[in-house]
Length: 328
Length: 199
Image (cartoon, rainbow over all chains, first blue to last red; front, top):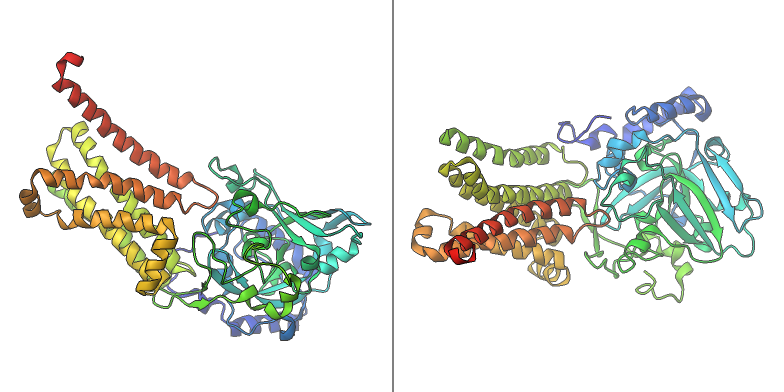
């Protein structure tokens, strides 16, 4: 994939304007293309580094604003969502994932579901892409580094996935793991990295079952680019971005709170809950405001950060009685 | 030899700035140009600072006394990039509000460290002229030795921001460590030459 830095004289926002995006989707629907016909070809194309080569997905559109499934805010252009990523398995620079993630094999893929479930088992790539009702949801994504985006994800509720494996009465937490494959992930081979791979995340059961918690298989109507966590990632819109673990290979349901990567590394800076909260600063920077991307040099686009990233109405109930400055 | 080298060094040091300016104007810095510019200008300041400190050893190794004349220009360029870095911080992180800057300085040690390094470099830049050098005499040399302090603080400023990978900060610390070690060793040698009784 070509490095885009300093090259195009056309602002990326022009490339995927909302109008063009909508037109293309209408065209694709009219053409009657289905996910299954074009899927495999372009997934393998992604593996060979074809630019932005996702397959069109078939899905319905979520519009229920009261549930938080859709925000009408200006969407961050596709090119920015895919060029500006944190995926430390490929390097710590924001451009590294776009540069190197094409080395990751995402087909075949499977997620192993184990632990406190009655029917432990595996989900394969086909199950993920065709076995669930896919829905487009437009969420805000707030990174702990104080930047944010608005992304049209395509996916299904994590709850729908978990229910298939029948969590037992002991199921209180869910742990997730990202693929760990040093041969394809150059960032995991860094000698100076302090991360204990594989990347791990976790949710409380009620957070995992919340309707907003999304398993995303696509964005902007197409399958996920590798750098955005192909083929399947979590999106928990009221928490800092690092909770939304990418390229999931394992889901473990358990009784006790699991350890998570950032918490293991620096517990004073990254808590298990990681709820977006303008009142609780990261020890090294303020969380009161955020840079909504894309920004420009003279329009930094700094906006105030909202409690639970603006999903307070939907999720505040989950944390009733908790001290969020302690359980951050 | 001297003039073309000086001219090339001048142009080379200006290139990153020109490159960044081009990117900023034509939107080639990605969706978060503020962050990209902050990062690059900080790095270029450190890189050129390392080159500044390389001039003394280079003079000794090459035996060409004029090499040292590049030092002032490089030092000023390091200050130039640090100043842009700081200005961008004011633009993107404090919105030019004094209260916000003060809060950042007090609450975040890495911001204080970066600011301290810039504050140390400021008088060095001001006194970099030939006239000031003449007027200050021995005191000029003492004052300009503070650049070592600024360099170490700048490395700590970078190290403090590392989230999961300290490789980059360690690389800079290593370079500055080697440059300082060279000076330390030379000073020790000079010292022992002055006291022949101690071998």
